[in-house]
Structure formats: structure tokens, C-alpha cells
Length: 326
Ligand SMILES: NC(=O)C1=CN([C@@H]2O[C@H](COP(=O)(O)OP(=O)(O)OC[C@H]3O[C@@H](n4cnc5c(N)ncnc54)[C@H](O)[C@@H]3O)[C@@H](O)[C@H]2O)C=CC1
Ligand SMILES: O=C(CO)COP(=O)(O)O
Image (cartoon, rainbow, N blue to C red):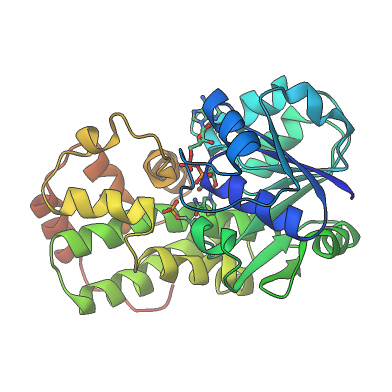
């Protein structure tokens, strides 16, 4: 695992390149934007997606996917909706793919490990997920994540290659659980932002986190996740993080909606990705198709389509009472 490729020069890809370089790996960061490649190589900075952070000299950027062919491990950090296309353009090789993006592919309804398996036949797949704001990880601040692979030897090998005292990796074999937590929390973080933007109060925030977690658990259990994974770093841990801070792009999007701005205006011209906006419609669709009740997710999907905050809130508060268990 000496040569590590990071595919995606956004905030999270750049932060993970820091992690790999600090672990002593020769690290190649593939970025789509020429100005990112230039700035990383010339100035050791990524001013476009992760400003004001000095990057490790062991990171070299490239805009050429062909250069990744000789790498021993690929960290895949594209936005979820672009993962398939980027992997299909990348050279064929059987280096393990560690998927670090969070989402569900909108058009197929597939989790990202299924997308990656189709786009990179023969390559082993693992997933990294958890409460990880990129700017904190890039600065070396203490962080813990879930690293999941069906093959537990692979998970251990990847952990050994990347883990550091301030980047703790907890291994698991629950790939679906790790992915579902990260995908669903992005949608719930938008709702968390609406609570803030509408000044609905701290009680409402706590209710949202608890009832949102019930929705995540219902969905996860139906799709093969284990409850302890959902209650861990990649589920509840990340839900708490992103429902509490404007550092979350999903939360900020929801905050703008709660303050009365149109979701379409907020989404237009965004350079950074708010994955929850793409996951919400497909998650709502999958839940409906499988008879899983997810009223908060449905509410977020409606808000993104332009429904009024007051009407959506009224609908949620008028739901008939039910027993608390999930
Ligand atoms: N930023 C963070 O703190 C964290 C992000 N993630 C996840 O990592 C993934 C990537 O997010 P960030 O690095 O934050 O991105 P970002 O929001 O910083 O940057 C946007 C990224 O999208 C890429 N992009 C835009 N259009 C594209 C296209 N047509 N094809 C391929 N790539 C395209 C850009 O090149 C850039 O890398 C997302 O799934 C996100 O949920 C996960 C954990 C933490
Ligand atoms: O996934 C994240 C932290 O774990 C980042 O959240 P946002 O994409 O909402 O910024």
C-alpha cells in the first residue's frame, strides 16, 4: 500500500490526501479542475475547495486519470452522482477501492459499493464513513471513522495503511450499514438546518435527531444494515455532527431554506456539493417502494421541490401519534 491515489480534489479528497501523506504514503491526488492541480503542485494549497490549509509535500496532484494505474490503493472521493462515470473513465486495475463519498445513485437507486463494483469489475471494495469535517481532518484534529469491508483482512490492511493517532479507524464488515448512515444523515442534516433557519428551537433539534435516527434505522434494517453500525460513528455520530453546525454544507442549505430562500436559488451555481439534495428524492422513492415510513425525509424532498416551509412543518406536526419504538 505504498502508492495511494485519491480520486477527487474537493475538500474531502484533499483532506484524505493529507491523511495518506501523513501516514507516509506516496500520494497522488486526481482533481478535475486544472487550477486545483496547479495550486496543489505549485503552492501546496487547494484554495478552491479547502482554503487556508498547508498541504503535505508528499501530495502530488494530476489531472490525468491514467497516472493512477500503478497505485496500490484508490480512495474514491467524487460526489456520489459522478462516481460511476469517473470510475468508468479510470484505468482498469484491481487496486482496492476505498469509497469515501456519501450518497445513493439517483438514477439507479443503488448504494455506492454496488455502483463501484459495476464500474470497477474485479476490484475489492471498502467504505470509509463517519463524522469528519474535511477542514478538521486536514489540520490533524482528532477524528474517528468507520472503515467497512466484507473482507475483514482487507479492512485491517487499509486501516494499517492509513490510521494515525488523530485519525482513528474502527473496522467493520457492515458495508451497507456504513453507507446508509452517511447517505441518510445528509438528508436529515438539511432538515437540521431548516430547524435552525426557522428558529424552531433546541427541543425541535433534539426531536429531529432522535426521530431522524429512527427513520435511518428503519431504512437501514430493511436494506441489510446492522443496528450497531447505524448507532455508531457512520450513522448517529455523523448525524449529530451535521445536524449541529453550519460547517455542514447540507445543514447550511437547510438553514437557507428555513430562512425563506428558494432551494433552487441556493442550489444554483454551487461549487461545493450538498449530497443530501441529490439523495433525498431517491431515498424518499426507495422508502415508499419498500413501505418504509420516513416523514422527515419526505419533508426534505418536498422542500427541495419548492414546497413551503410552513406547510411542510404543519404536515409533520399533524401526523397521528404513534408508539415511540422504531
Ligand atoms: N467535505 C467534507 O467534509 C466531507 C465530504 N464527504 C463526501 O465526499 C464527497 C465529495 O465531497 P467534497 O470533497 O466535500 O466535495 P466539494 O464540495 O469540496 O467539491 C466538489 C467536488 O465535486 C467535483 N465535481 C463537480 N462536478 C463533477 C463532475 N461532473 N464529475 C466529477 N466530479 C465533479 C469537483 O471536482 C470537486 O471535487 C461527497 O460525497 C461528500 O458527501 C464525506 C465526508 C466529509
Ligand atoms: O459528511 C460530512 C461530515 O461527516 C460533511 O457534511 P456536509 O457534506 O454536509 O458538509
